Image (cartoon, rainbow, N blue to C red; front, side, top):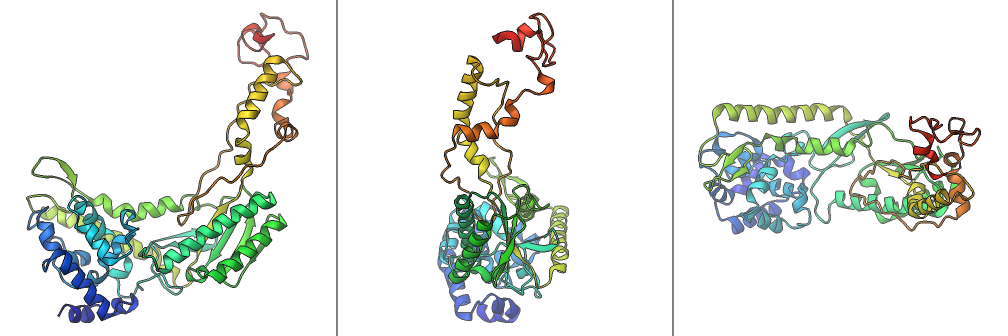
Length: 425
């Protein structure tokens, strides 16, 4: 009965998600085995009032709270693997067991039931982020290119996981090539979603990255049959890149802000999502929440609509390692400068503050940026690097004229010479 209802109610969703009747049957049986015939409904009633959830109409809630097999029900537990706390749970049963834990149930259930995907709410939108799909979780413009960010089910064998692993491998390889050739640059990698997940494609892209970086030429472009690559200067920061991840997180977390505060019988405050313990949700509150969540869905559909079928996903890699290498020597250089200053040896070193070069860290698709082995620089290189800072300027001509101890210090700060730069002489 349940399988037949699911097939009649959402055949396009089941087909696009590759959910066979056998798989659907197993999913339903797994839920019943772990939760009982009433599965989530009985567990929910232990934490919230019996009437609270019945007042809120939403496709996902219909499937979860009333036990109906709808568009959302067959895949709603898989949706939970988008949550960070459940990403290491690779099996359907493991996710359900995690959700069954009373300690974390309210938090998990609230996030799970509100972490909607367009695929589950719109019959015209495909389930997975296929090359011709239209299911991005966030859309934005990168220069003249329309881009999307997709958060899909993080099972061990999914295309998204393979693509994510490929991005991490390419990022590490790019850093290694930049250090090998001593060339600081930014590399822009652009490819369709599925096209770069195979081993042969990755090897071809690694060879092309090696070739482009070895040329040591800003503006050089290349690519393979599945991607485009371009070399940019270390200071090249296209507008929108650094804010992309924050925009994506804001978009994914927006619905969670709809939570209301309730109280348990022990008078401890908790975040209960759309539910308030021991009393039904007021009609006005229900309408407000319903309007806000559907408004969110409408805005997201409008945002995605112009993208159509040719969206891209990109990886932006900053390979500028020179400033990190310098920072590895800053303690040694700082000690040497201080020693020369105090002993008046060789050069005049005046109030030099060594700081790291300001760069914004950027992580995309789970890439962990690592600091590789630093190159050892000699004194000659350090002197050359700091040459512009070490030489006296026309504004600081301390020794071009005689300054009395009680005269104003030539640095212009306002102190007497004996209280300022003349203190050491």
